[in-house]
Image (cartoon, rainbow, N blue to C red):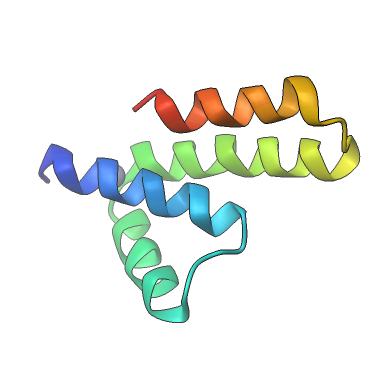
Length: 73
Ligand SMILES: [Zn+2]
């Protein structure tokens, strides 16, 4: 699998955890995740951050963490 596909998938995962993804793109992400453990793990990391944000709405550290998570790939 090409590296660009992982990068693309991770960007969509970030949008997915924000609820910003269309049905079509959700399907594409799920197709990729089915064959890619690395991106599955990335998805769990992103969703942990999203859930942490839901529990703790303080914008400072959580928002920063999320931005770092997006830049890091
Ligand atoms: Zn992948």
